[in-house]
Image 1 (cartoon, rainbow, N blue to C red):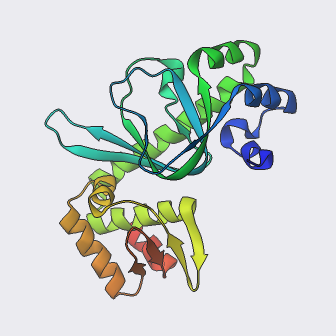
Image 2: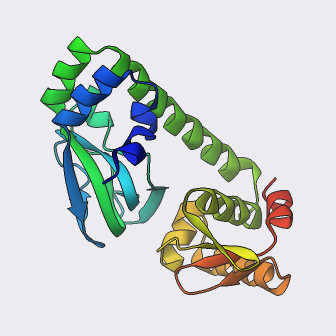
Length: 225
């Protein structure tokens, strides 16, 4: 793993070189295959992971058995960081969507690092604030946006983090089933499929299995507002 890539992770980006070396020296590199589970909902949390490659989905199961997809996380984002501040039961299940590489740090080690390197706490708090801001935006979208608007916004968000140039468009390998994509935008699978079909007929996107090619970013951006 390139240390230059690790250095760009938001958790580390503004740390001085000495602090970065100390923290990096305590983290363990872990490679995880697609489909494996990092942790399950309600399990005790004793560590967190920084994603350096790949993607992870966070899912929640309601008491009545219904499932929801809370987020899809990618390189530079943190999984399981709530356990750093409150090492209690996990609030979601984290499943690896594609072959991924992580930097893993155990809770007690991180607490010791915080005592000697307080700048690390500022970085983690900023990461938590960014996640909270995204959650608030998603809640507002559920109230004020229609389903096609939420689908357009989700596709743009996934493209920003996972998209790769593909001819005249951007190919986004989201690795989600149709049901999971529907859960991500808080709608039924039928309604989301209808939105995707409409975007496709207008020439804005091209659906390709568990991927989508965005062909008209500007119109998708206008539809997402």
